[in-house]
Amino acid sequence: MNKNRTMKPIVAAVLCKSLKRLALIASLSVVAVAGAHAQDAAKADEKTWPCVQAKVMNLSPTAMWDGPAIEEIKDIYRDDAVRKLVPFIVSRRVELTEVEKAIEDFAKAHPEDKRDEALTLLFAGAFDSANITRRSVVRGIERYQARQRARADQLQVKSTELTALRRDAGKSAEANKAAKQAQVKYDWDARVFEERQQNIPFACEIPVIIGQRVYALAQAIRAQMIN
Image (cartoon, rainbow, N blue to C red; front, side, top):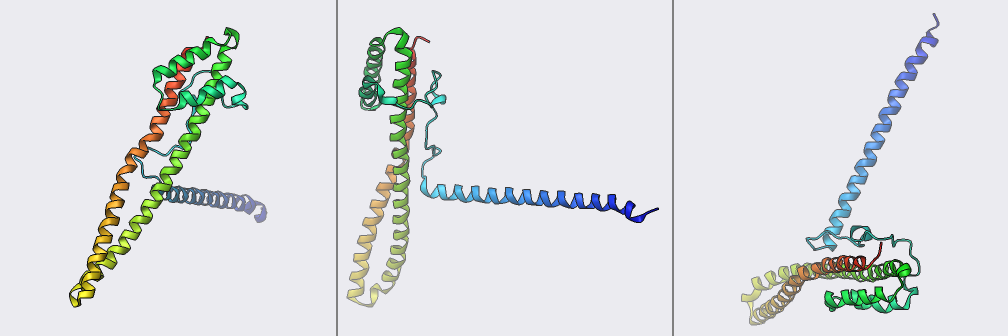
């Protein structure tokens, strides 16, 4: 019996098992690296996003609109009436009752065979405008949080410096004066930090309010559509 002929299947089986094991190790390594990157991203996000609400950069039209798809619409503002009406209905200063009346008038101004198309265009414009504003707010919150973190770091440094000045305050009148001045400056900076920190929860509500507004617009526009 030829030993080489017998050994070949054994060698092949061992080699196959080794390759599978290496592939498994490689895949686990990829998962581990991906997981580490995801954790790093989450930690980085915690530093820039202070809100309880999850950070969502873009609203999804399908989550609030069951009418015709708007994702593929290119020239949203080709209709002058849409271009003029969008800022009015998107503005949170305008009561929804006024908005609903304006949308109804807009719908009646279009013949029935063109009405749904015009109303879809109107929602596309409102959604686009609100999404742009909302993204700007989200980025603004991140910038605000970054500045607050920088202030917190500065306060930490000043606290350490103040501790050293207090320790030396009894050595001379000049040292005592320096400690008092540093304390006043620190107290002022800490107060400013706390006051600005209190603004964050209010700022965090703005993206939510914008999303709620878009949903209300979707319902009002959809109610005027024929199909």
